[in-house]
Amino acid sequence: MVGKCWGKRILSFVKIKHQERGTSVQSSLLYFFYILGFLSLSIIFHLSEKIFYYGTSTKNTYNSSLIEQISLKHIAPNSSLSSGAINVGIWTVNCIGRLGNRMGQYATLYSLAKLNGYQAYIHPEMHSALSPVFKITLPVIPAEVFRKIQWKNVYLHDWMSEDYRHIQGKYVQLTGYPCSYTFYHHIRQEILKEFTFHDHIKEDVNHYLQIMRGERQNVTYVGVHVRRGDYVRVMPKAWKGVVADKGYLEKAMNYFRKKYLNPIFVVTSNGMEWCKKNINASMGDVYYAGDGKEGSPGRDFALLSHCNHTIMTIGTFGIWAAYLAGGEAVYLANYTLPDSPFLKVFKPSAAFLPEWIGIPADLSPLLPKP
Image (cartoon, rainbow, N blue to C red; front, side, top):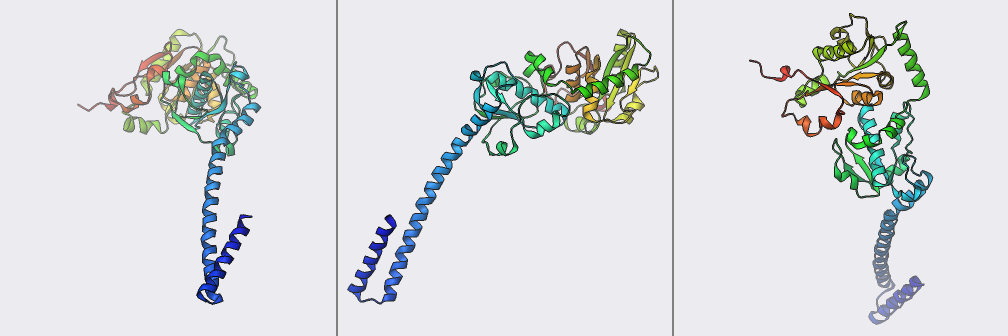
């Protein structure tokens, strides 16, 4: 209707101009196309404003309509809260690092989402990393949905803070490398249940441990994780720290040898050749997992977790193995200089349980030569 009216006005205007000025038909057509072009630009401008408005409105309401569909499908499998107590929203966490890092991220998400009253979801990459090993229960957010949501990123340092009990936002993505019992130890049994190994893994590991035992009775399995790899270079150069040396491992193993009658040390490492040269296996109580070859992280982790006690060196892999195994745990303590930048991102008191036993590291390689 509006288009017809404007068309009549334009034709009338052209006709009047033609009569008054005696212009040619060609001049009239020029006027006509000039005005038509002006009107076209005006219409395009107004349409773009409307498209922007409706597009923005749709974008703003996208999250809520999407979450309603997903939340109704997955109601709080990670908590005892009723469906009415769970706010409509999605909380997730970044998936970075290796197995130990991702376990820390998963457990922290599980705990903080529950603490703040929201449903936790994990990215497909997190599910792919953990589900082949553990019977995890958190629902997976589809990748296409993950990309479309406007996340509020909340960076976490590596220990619990009071602020984390009151995080605002319905669509929150936790970021960082959180791996501290201070986030989730109050729900330890739930976390241990999340990290329950699949049955076939349990059977394989228990069979392997039985072979190690042989005819011996009343044995005590001690899992030993020796982190080498990139840490050998990174710790002294970037963090003013050291990794475990031969002396530390000897002290830790002697602690268990003195306390238990028939200990069996199950050694896993990403530096097996170093372990063979530096661990005293002359007493016949040391076994290198995978026949002395570096195994898959999942299988090595399962072996450590099924032992009675743990000796760890450095890194989240060993920390988590000790947490799942229970029993006694010996860790490398004070492995950085007091002015290490590492202490700004890592708090030992928040990483190692109070009952765990620390053996101080030898920092002499970092000190100036006399």
